[in-house]
Image 1 (tube, rainbow, N blue to C red):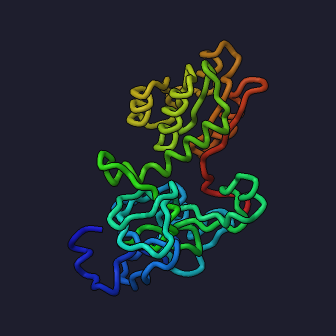
Image 2: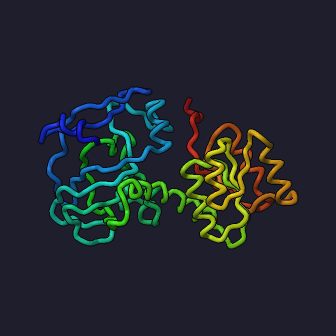
Image 3: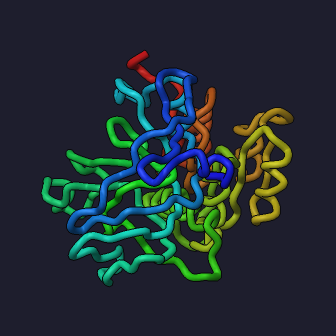
Amino acid sequence: MGKALASVADNNTMLAVRLHGPRDLRVEQISRPASPGPGMALLRVTAVGVCGSDIHTYQDARIGDTVVETPMILGHEFAAVVEAVGPESYDGVFAPLQVGARVAVDPAQPCGRCEMCEHGHPNLCHRLHFCGTYPDDGSLSEYMLMPAHTCFPIPDSMDDATAALLEPLGIAIHAVDLAKLHVADSVAILGAGPIGLYILQMARLSGADPIYVVDQFPWRLNLAARYGGIPINFKDSDPLVAIKQATGGRGVDVAIEAAWADHSIQWAAEMARLGGRLVLVGIPKRTGWR
């Protein structure tokens, strides 16, 4: 939050950006969070990223079958400074969380007790709370309360904006893990937005080669080329034909869809070789519930 905006709020209130309905965002003065209880931390938010899921929720006041029923704060990619901690507050590496620490924050709050959590899949928790997904408020505010264990201290060498980008980096790491990449696997990535470019870099670190990147925007494809990808602009040529020609008709070992636009899922499926792997990462604008 800028200094000019922050000066409007007093010690008992803060500014937040709340969604009231489709395309209805409002900067509002609301009550500041209470003092943190056991295992909790009061955070002063320093940087927030905007995810594709935030955009979907902004446009439709819902994402999938989760409907925004009352005004809520969006945002889940964020960094913060610890303002206060409650008793028995330990950070994400099980050390006492310190006031003044700069932290990157995991927005997911699984229950830790359901079947999925106990099987090591907290992302599939049946009672998952997630910042910025209704009914849980997110990080587009000056202050927020979070479980201390979701806070991960960051070094002085990392700025706040970079720390906020660690959450989308986690998506790319998970996608590459699901892809089970091997050295010299060929890969096609559909979508060269932030997530697609992250996946590109993670795939290269995994030893994949070659890596084709499909998008329509030259500036994105230029970045993909800079990071070691082979750019394919689907406005200039048929990406299926381009991939088939480049692979001698075989297709790629792994196709990763990170756009979910128009025919991207079908393209990704057809680009994968016989017995290849397909990973879907993108979020659809419209699904069956519409």
